[in-house]
Length: 145
Image (tube, rainbow, N blue to C red; front, side, top):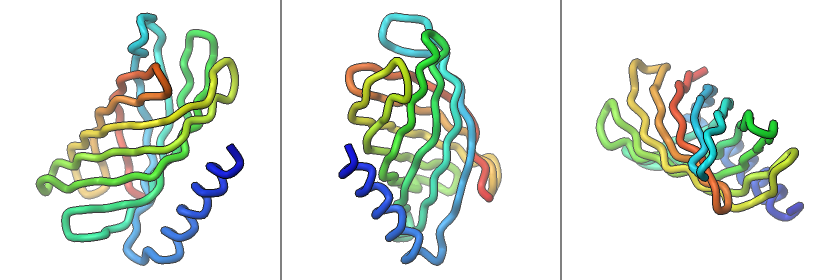
């Protein structure tokens, strides 16, 4: 696990040192689990993306998600990619490793994302967050800083 965390920090450092046109965004989301239970999920998101090409951005993503049933906390560390399908719609994928802080195990993390830009600094986001064999669907907002 130390190797994965080290790799994520190395990627984030490389992105930060090479990206002069990067954008830091923060946001929040709410959702429900998909593994048969009806647990609610509340979380926060942070991503840093820079333009790799005209229609593609890459970077790093993290955040926290709290699953209310059992008070489980998830810390995802992921590499992020976004495809700018139109001027208002982005399609994305975050992939990495999720660390279960309490009452939950660690595992592979993936998150397909749909974003609709309401303005230059606010986007509406819908996504599925998969962690190992479980996951949750969620919706929320992202704000550019």
